[in-house]
Image (cartoon, rainbow, N blue to C red; front, side):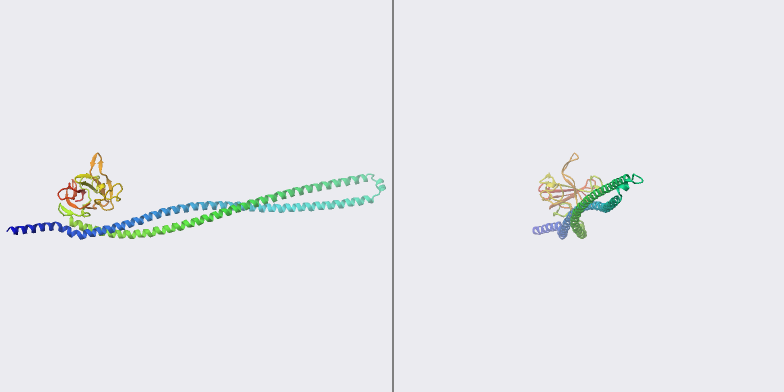
Length: 409
């Protein structure tokens, strides 16, 4: 009889143990699937972030190349204006050279005409003098002395002197005009030479500007090529991001499906059930006192203790996830990315805040066990639904302890 009771008790204990662990053993496959999907999802997001970083870097280069192209284009335009200005000046100098050449030709013709006039006048003068000399010899002194006028010799002499003076005056005037024209010709030739010199200088300056413009065009072409390469890289990486985004959405949908299935399996687990790190233990909500009330105030109040003493959760959580919070990584974050840090551990609004507040943009995001342990639950809508996980069964003051508040149910 006693042996039978012992056997019955043994069977009862085994049955109780089996009943206690069966739900977890059933969930083991799903939990592994969830972890694998989460790992894949994180890989996809990491790869997306890497590609996005490359896109951002390429866009910075693209902007830098565009700025350099704009700068070079401005310099090219400025040089083009200078070249056009010098071309106009050169055209003006060409007109001046043409006018000076015409003036020189005109002056040369005038000088030649003056030379001809002087030669002709000298020839006529010589001829008249010869004629006068011959006429003078044909007159006898007696005929001249007994002239009926009596004054012919005097008139003759006066005429001869007057003609000589007039001729000399005309020659002097023609020579003066010739000298002025020759001076003008020299001045015109000098002006033309200076204009040609200025023109040559401008042509050289224009050539220097054109060479520099060509160099700038070549530099601009290099930057255009680089910018086109970067633009192509950005387009290619954006296409990759689109592909990864689609893959991310599919993987996320798979994660949501597994999480929902897991949550449906464990949401009715009784208080005191043993759970593994990463197990879904509830959903983020806004039960209890939250600011603002309603969905806008949805967040997770997350506290930790070690051997019964409150500690800052940031000292236990993995670093590198959220700026300003992270420690030795002995526990995991209870929310999955994306989420953000809303309130720190310590004094706040005149009261001690023995937890941190974190929030997901998804109002009812799943909450995960931060470590292995025995899960307890309780609370109400008005006071706030909560979970706590203790490393030691029925003794939360021994080992690690985590507290989760404001859950959806």
